[in-house]
Amino acid sequence: MFTMEKKMNLWKKISILGVSDEMPIYKQKSTIFFNIVMRISIIVMISIALLMIFVLKLKYVPIGIFAGLPLVALSLFLNLKGKVNLSIFITSLIFPIYFTFLSVFSKLNGEGLTIIYSMVPRFGIIIMSVISFAVLGFGDTKKAFSGAIFGLLILIFFNKIHALFGINIKNFEYNKEDINILIIELTAIFVFIIMIVSILQKINNEYEQIVTKQKEELEEKNIEIIAQKDEIETQRDNERFQKEKIEVQNKEITDSIKYASRIQNAALPSLDLISNLFELFVFFKPRDIVSGDFYWFKKTESKTIVVAADCTGHGVPGAFVSLLGISFLNEIITKKNNLNSDEIVNLLRDKIKHSMRQDEANSEQKDGMDLALFIIDEKTLNLQFTGAQNPLYIVRKNMNSSELDKFEQNKKIRIFKDNKHPEYTLIELKADRMPVGIYLIEKDFSRTYFQLKKEDIIYSFSDGYIDQFGGEKNEKFLSANFKKLLVCIAEKPIHAQKIILDRKFKDWKGNFEQLDDVLVIGLKI
Image (cartoon, rainbow, N blue to C red; front, side, top):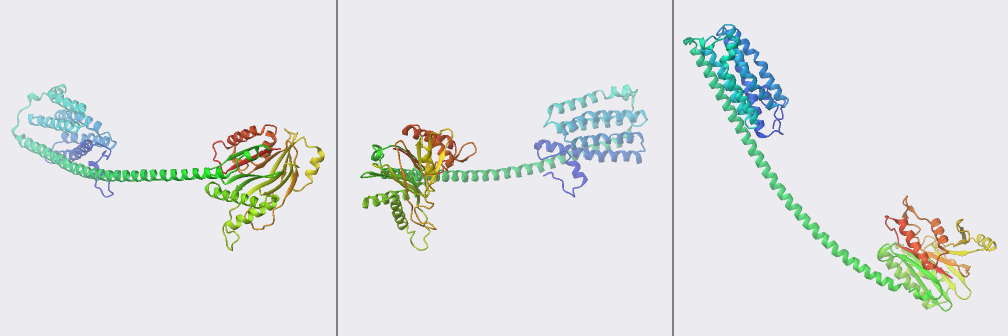
């Protein structure tokens, strides 16, 4: 409201000196009213001074009047600085003194030496005290009463103050010729009061309109707030409904997946099938409820077939592929149980490709699996191995140098030793670099033979353990660390090795998310 326009005239600017929208309404009104009074006072003082100079031929009274103009300027300056109450309070103290000493000054110089001239300063004291009291009364009653009492004291001691300067007002004569001047001055004072009252009424009317407008705006805002509140509550109800709906759906989906997990677990073979032949553990940790990793055992006459597989994806998609893999392995071995490891994997690939229609032209289905399949002849301890991307680790204790030289010359074998455990050697049987599924350059899977010894430990696994992020730097565990870990735990009992692998995995993962399904099979001859 009070932002100054570029073309705002000087009087308007004077009227709103020190006024801001942050002020209470009563203080805005008081400040504007006082500024207007001071503005009118300037005009009245200059007019009276000029009238006395050119009409009444007075000299010293006008000088005294002009001397009061800096007092008005001081009041306006204090208003401009935002010290409105201080400005009005000072005015209520200085102007009574000013009118008194204006009277003294003029009489000492031989002007205004009548009773009538002595009444005019008193009217000025009364008017300024009333104005100051009216302006200060709403905001600072203490200063308002102080200013009014001070003006009253000046009136009471008006004659005594003159007496200090040797002026005895009681000895002044009544001069009929000055009655006209008194009438004029009283009329001017009356007009001044009427103007002040009119201005005060105008200010009140303007502020009533402002308050009414602000009230209407506030009511409109309240209506908008209520509407927004209703809308927010509606949205909150909708969100609550959607949340409850999603929670119900999630529960239904989770229950379905849990049931699917029971089906998948039922499809996985029981460890009892081969636990009487080997010491073994299966560390199986799905990322979700169901898993894309699976393990599979089969006992046929004197041979044992073991598979550790990692299907494309994890969760429900991976679980579907894993069920296909388990079903096809059962079918392949049931029809012909004397197959070599490479033949089983080749047949499995054909069935995977056909079931997923990967052998059709323009097929975009790329799902399949990585696996390690090995067959152990229980009589001869001869091992056959075929790997699709996934190798097979064998840890042997106290390997002699001739054996070591023989393995190092085999291109299908890689040797790993750890200086902290020199008595153990990890032998890696390399896998073929293609998956069980469609591949750009396909060829038959190969077969690797290896002669086992008693106390050898075979480890078959998916890549979930190796690829898990964690540690202080949030990096992959990596195969080198995995090999060191297997060599380190080889001396432990099989059941204890599983516990150590589980604890190490949790410690490494920490607060990070598990990225993939995890499967590690340990089997001791």
